[in-house]
Image (cartoon, rainbow, N blue to C red):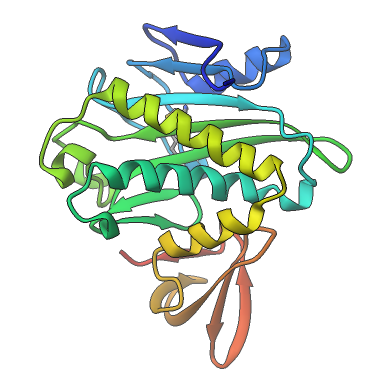
Length: 247
Ligand code: BTN
């Protein structure tokens, strides 16, 4: 209905997130999609680069104007995108349980990263004015630089090359459905699905905290988006930069 109605396809761009942020300033409508096959300065979380083989993957950004959302609940957007990504990707995998959300921004298949999310929020006084959601999916790429950790693609994990147009169309539909659910006040359903997909949820998992490897029990993610863990018989909350999973 609205995601992708304004579809901006670029032969090459530095970063679709940066381009979408410029469009946002000129009043681009909610649901605008900026997509390219060749991203030359792709950005990832924590100032990392996002490298993607031209012609084999999906690199795109979507503009949202979620003014209905209280800024304290901004992480719900991340949750709804993660759920949409997982449920879409899992359709192409032999075993649907292979696909997991690794808090806070990664999608894993068979414990390997196949997709990442970069959300850039523009927050007003109490509400979220706009958000640019950047999504990178390794679709048909088959070679990965080991320096960048355990990366893989849907084709490698699922066994077959995937039609990228079909994947994108299905994903945009799923994202729109989940977004409308959020807008209709049905955040509970998104939360429920998020925890079904979450890697390590209600399990004992090794995390790196303050440079040390610790055995923790994952309790969940609070409304601010912090990871809730039990450690040394205490409930603790960690922000995005404070903790890492050992994979
Ligand atoms: C991560 O896992 O660190 C997030 C990666 C996000 C990459 C996507 S690709 C499209 C969009 N444009 C960017 O520059 N980054 C995001």
